[in-house]
Image 1 (tube, rainbow, N blue to C red):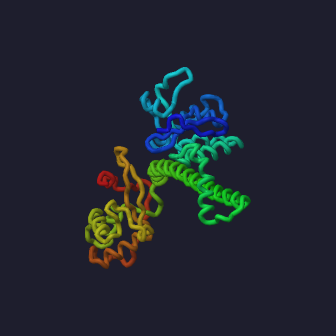
Image 2: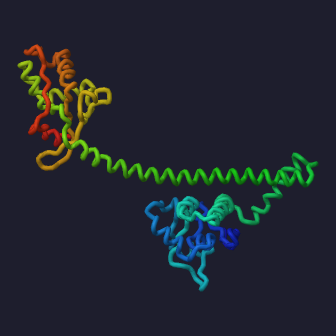
Image 3: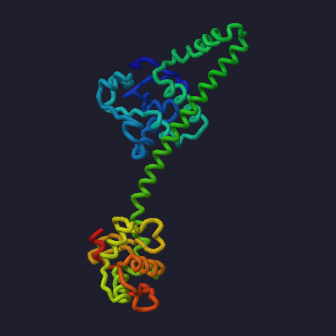
Length: 315
């Protein structure tokens, strides 16, 4: 327990509190340390709560015994019904809007002295110089006082640098969490964007049903859309969903379509270049016969031409 052990931050006594293995501060202590009006940290917390993760950035406790054990009391006596505790990451996210010189100094003190010395009290921190002196006595017993002072300052600077690296790592984790949330939102909205952009078929492409009819007319051998799609999947030209693999995307378009009931899905269309390419692949594989005509006429989509929308229901 850390009851009655305090650290001085900007002339404010902060009771050392650890909850579930993490050092924490209250919203009231943040206001006091930063010299802000009561309720400032609470307002920031409520406004940004959706960006914080409970159990990682903050805890909310409502058990009187837990609150009392942490040394949190009210001036008039007793304890509050609920208390919000912020971890280091939650604290850093909450005070990002505090940009005055005092705010930076307080942040540095809280991070380096309070959060980064978890498990240590203010008394233990003062022993730091004594520990440094023991190291000096062991390795440089003849060192004079000026040298000792220089070494103490060096050790302190190294320790502060280590702490600053820790702060940057924490801030980086906060930024990564924010970026992840933004990327998730973008990914969630991307299908809607793709659907809107691709809802109109590109000129110069035809549906797979149209291609099958064209091939049947050219060769005199009837072949259906499903048979062509099955062969393309077997040849690893199309995926299971009939989306073309990367190396074959120049021959096909995979676009969003709507069926007659307004249900959305995707359809595979054949580009002008893909029509000639696919015809030759099918012919060489023996899937279709030779052309009756000496020249294959590429069919382009015209007004009123539609995809076989029944495919949407099969996706």
